[in-house]
Image (cartoon, rainbow, N blue to C red):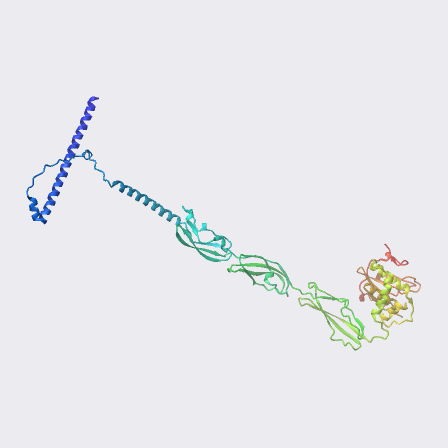
Length: 507
């Protein structure tokens, strides 16, 4: 153990001696270099200033040389620290920190500004915001701003908006494009029309139109519909940006080929100078047109001359179909015995009011009229039966006359009661014609005869044609007439409802 320690110490001393020798040798070498440099400097001075050099060359008394004191730190190879080293190190440190910070700032700036998108295009109706133009998350979001208030933008109107996004003090010009590329939506309204109708305006054929901007509607394609059938017309709905939609509009078109039907017309006999009621009881119907027109052509009539003239009825529907019918108008001179119909109806109203009341049905009123005429007008062949108004007036006031008087008196009462009626004339006949009333009750036609019949103390009320012709008295009927000239009578009998003696309708 001691030998090892001794050996180690010996080695250490040897290394110290070796180090001392090296230091010494280094010092001597440095001194030699200094002397050489001094000799060189002196030689340069002598060359430049010979006199001064000569004087300097005079031998001087040599001063004893001071032996340089060796610093122990130099002895071991440790150099003396420069007094400016620490400040320089601090400056260098701060320069490094600044460079690092600057590099980081440049990196953050480049990275964050690279997230800016300078242009966006959106569909009209959508909205925009600043986040659309800064796609990432900036390190310092507070240093990002915009000079556009997105809440004030009209997103409905297609337009281009230019604005600036500022990030870290740098302005970036940006663009917001609002475009409309969406076509309008709409629905067609199914149409029903006739082949002669005009196609309705397109605005009436399209509904549920939707678009953010104004639209125009126009027909794009209209097929020919003159022959009728089912068709599809095309309507074009276009917005202000030029986007459009083609809408199908179904059409159901009827081609009308059936002319109107004229009914209720019959020959007219009237006195010259009296009003001619051509349209009384005349009706016109059509299978499609609810209001067909009726024209009465009287161009052949000479109003101030007696005679028989043709009058033409001409009906038309709105599709142009027409039909015609004609009657004979007979004009005769008015007899001196003629009574104004208003006088006749005035007398009839007084009598009707005395024998009926408002709660009665039409059947009950008609029974009272037939009963009253039968038992209040007396049969008399000596009478004026030249015209119906004279006959009715005499029946209502004088209360006597023949079958013509009885029938016309009942007619006047039926007229003021509002019961539709007509006169039937016996035809053929041998000696004299006969007249009786034909009335309509509840949509059915019935025969009524209030004229007294020899050997038959009653009257006929609401007989069907079959019942009337089946009546025989003393082997004689007398009810012959042309069925084709009158409406068909009822088929079901109502005689079980009639109380003739009490002139009332049974419950």
